[in-house]
Image (cartoon, rainbow, N blue to C red):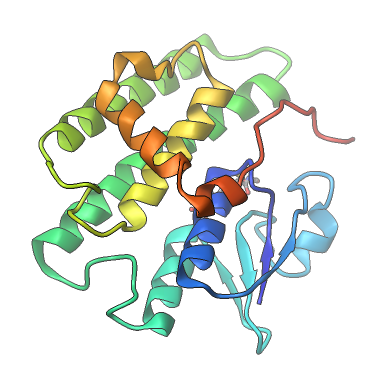
Length: 211
Ligand SMILES: N[C@@H](CCC(=O)N[C@@H](CS)C(=O)NCC(=O)O)C(=O)O
């Protein structure tokens, strides 16, 4: 299978880390959503990443949907999401909050990069949403005593949270200084120390889109 997208995207990174943990081999095409938009469009009309091309040519998009399909492929015992019940609902909520944090961080990057005149209202809104999510995730993680978010096994909740924290911290250090959210700092450090996280990474660097 082929994973399209660069690892500085928290969404591409979460998929690549999950593939690595599942021990599923994949080819990586680190295409840029702007610079490689035309060849990306041949696989995904939204021109977004991650885009995953399966061995039979089927194309999957949206990180959550991609990982849902991969969980089904590897089977319930190796899946990285609880199959049902309260644990599944909690994991999905953490993924939604952390994914939303990443969405807002990406949105803020595009606002600054693509608009000649930025909207202070939008910037303040994104910043407030990010800080609110960090507070909620900090409280949630503090209430859980397990090694990982949902207990003793790593799940998509851990991976999404760590990928979002890393990206948001690199892209917006003025908003996301994890010394203010110590449980999240510890969570991030524990994840980033794992071999899969060490192998799958690309520091975020602001690059204006090619015209
Ligand atoms: N909800 C999507 C978000 C993916 C996303 O925002 N990808 C960004 C890169 S980090 C992208 O493709 N941006 C280009 C665009 O939206 O036009 C997912 O989980 O896959």
